[in-house]
Image (tube, rainbow, N blue to C red; front, side):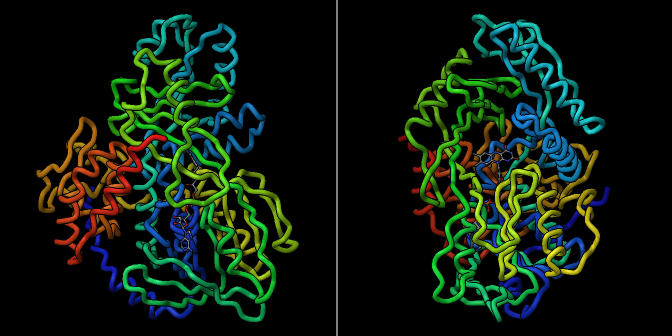
Length: 529
Ligand SMILES: Cc1cc2nc3c(=O)[nH]c(=O)nc-3n(C[C@H](O)[C@H](O)[C@H](O)COP(=O)(O)OP(=O)(O)OC[C@H]3O[C@@H](n4cnc5c(N)ncnc54)[C@H](O)[C@@H]3O)c2cc1C
């Protein structure tokens, strides 16, 4: 297998290309799962693409998922078999195209009533059947003893057994960076820290964007045949830039709802299996998932009426997660055990016909709207189905003749940067995430200098250099929150290495890197209401 040698990313030349790019086929606003998925698909079909992210890739919801690549067991309960079948197909596609970032993960559902074992077990057999040849492993009924073997800290009193099934797990923020890098490799111009501040409109049609480089303040205008608004819960702000002068504000289509995750040490749930509680005391689902040497507990679903970039949890959400985890685990997590708390916003879409007569909610959980001006807005859905969502978005662009029709399906077998199926995984902690690029990492200065190390995880000086040279990281936060996931795993440890990371940022990029703001952010990830 040849060693991939990535080209270092030079922001100055990216911005020079942006300045020189007067017109392209497609501008995508937003560098989360959805926007990057659209950018990659369009670039792979040979369109000229610009994708602009206001902050860092996956700074929004796309770094705050539960990290599951899943078919959606809960849609099964709702009888939406088509949706489940499609998500299972996408699950297999993602695992095949990014094996260094997404792997299969076994789950155990503990059962405390005899009927739960049969009821959920039959449902999960249907899940297997829908996955067909693309299944990840067969569902099994477990005895109480076997359930305790797989979940050593599960509450034994009244345990009637369990069900084991398979789904996938991934590193969401690193996947976003890989999508950006793969899109760039296919010719797209993808720039982070570059907010879109305005839309260009001519004769009532949207035909480009105005953007600003957040570092220098420089302004850019890019004209395009098609503009896609993929800004997650923030889509309404862009929709409102797309108004005729003097017309009233458009009513929002997004009602945000937040989900909280708490991270605790692995000894609360040692072993390699995740736990799913299908129905908590108040009817919600609770996951306890091993991830990068820690255990992630979550999540919640709480409506909010603001759109914070760094939303904070409510006290009752934290109490709910700790209380419910404590009902199922013998080692009960308490507030003082939480290493990091992170919150993501879901865009729940309210029906609206204010965008013109071509409003259509697709038969999935995402929505694509094409406004009278031709602005295409996409929101909702899930990480697992980002690729299928991108196809839907491009389909709509083609239906509306904003782009000429080019055949779909080009990303089904498109490996992401670093994917090298069958390659043995690296031995150093975290090295496997680099896939075929691991030798490049190993050759950088500081490959043996660990800034932080903890069981399955680690952050070396070389990883920081790799992030800055090849992965478009620009700040201490970009490195510690989304290239490494230390902020999400252990916020105190992240604050502890911020100065060392800052020195490497200065060395690599030649700029003074602030740490005060990052340390304040880390404090927020440590603070429970
Ligand atoms: C709590 C929670 C758990 C989840 N767990 C899972 C899971 O386990 N598995 C799964 O498959 N899915 C999961 N999801 C769903 C998944 O995370 C989302 O569907 C996905 O991340 C949405 O991506 P997005 O790109 O649409 O939005 P975002 O990731 O929010 O991206 C939008 C981007 O637009 C940028 N932006 C905003 N304004 C501008 C502007 N003016 N100019 C340029 N850029 C701008 C933002 O900075 C942001 O990066 C979960 C969601 C939540 C909330």
